[in-house]
Length: 370
Image (cartoon, rainbow, N blue to C red; front, side, top):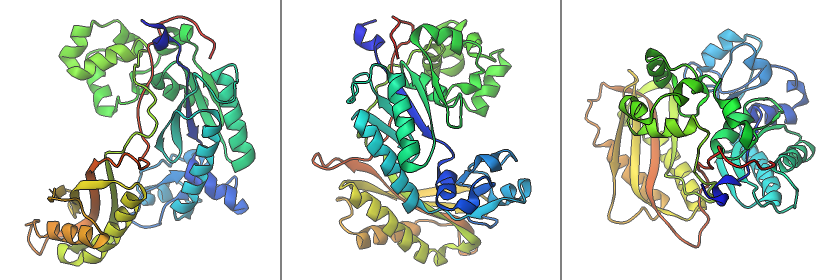
């Protein structure tokens, strides 16, 4: 293992209950109360929940009607993404004071490689403390941070002392920290995979650690190789600044199920939204996608790759509407959702890219002060 691989210092920053915290910051009447960021209604889902609401079991992505049932005292606030993006930009500006190696995952979450930091702070832990303090003082928000030798470990660490917490995993502590963890703490191990693991006697990371690589490959295919590495704290992925997103999309769930013929207004509105997002990043998308979900929750997509990328919002809208004509479920079929997407981007090298990513190092190595 080379020296460069063993000396990386990664910080994962995760804003606490971000959308709900912005709402509570901007409206003093909401502070200390259970806030649910969502439109009320049978079709709405929860975008975010304050920690006061989470105590009742309210979680992101659950139906709003379920959140209302779990927490009758909840205050529902419609999302205001313009304000959330502004707060996210403020956090990004703070990150850039310390490093330019920033890989955002969403508005409220990012990886930072601070192996070499711009403020000459001696450790990554000091950098994380400074960032959290600046977020608190300048944005009046809180963030949790994880500090570790790679992205996989930093991601786990940032969740360890939420909210408003900081947790550090030193390289020599990796195995002691990892082995007792439930396998469900590994990013990417969902409920289905976790159930498959339990069926063969894998409950903890330590159980994974003691299996041979060939056994993991037999059970999980190529993902078994990744599990073998993660059980040893190994993650060679790099923090990649300016990683291009693979797609841009927007979708809308209707208040009442409607036939396909009545979706034109929504398609036009979504096409405008997607076009604005794609223009902000000055990239041409070769493929246009129409997504639909039926009343019975069946999803279907139609896509086309024209000879040239759409050159205007009108052209994108025309293509999206033409895709609608390729749906042959009959006029009696009702739909609950429509979405428009752009993908297969061609790169304009002089233009900024969407930022996103994944990365880090092998942590079974030399001790360094992070």
